[in-house]
Amino acid sequence: MATSLALFGDRREAGRRLAAELGKLALDDPLVLALPRGGVPVAFEVARALDAQLDLLIVRKIGAPGHEEFGIGAVVDGADPQCVMNNDIVRMIRPDPDRVRIEIDRQLAELERRRRAYLGDAEPVSVTGRTVIVVDDGIATGGTVKAALMAIRRNDPAELILAVPVAPPDSLAALAPLCDRIVCPYRPDPFYAVGVHYRDFRQVDDAEVIDLFTRSRRAG
Image (cartoon, rainbow, N blue to C red; front, side, top):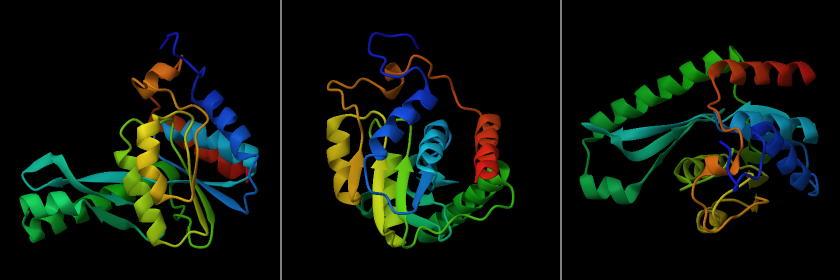
């Protein structure tokens, strides 16, 4: 998308610029977790520059029974998958617990299906005791990232870092208590949308995700 607001040519360029900021930090054996699909090209460049391990972090919304578009929580994959519920909404609508359990199980199965589609038989990497860097191509409201950070924290990383090329200051302020530090080189205000800060913000397809992870494993 061509625009005067563009900061990056594409996600790969954004990843290299984000990696330059992360490279200034003392990071002990970092693990880079990419939020698919848009975060994968960014995270690929970060992991390559830092000589870090790369893995996926898939998040699936839990919809209210009968109103699946209305999110009441999320499931987050990993070596120890987590379910993160929005307790305020759950208390407000009081969904049937059995139906919620069915929806959680359905989304956990979808996490597993997607992981295998992208990575084959590769098992999720444990975050326990690791320096974990969660990477996306940008943040607007931050709902998905919030669930991801909350889930990872439960699995006891040594340090939890959120790294994104661009995000609005208010969203970053809301996410700051959920991680140890945030690396975000560009914090425009007003923000508008993630896509306007890229000249090329075409959709990342499954084939690109698979290709980048295949290349990452070969390099490792």
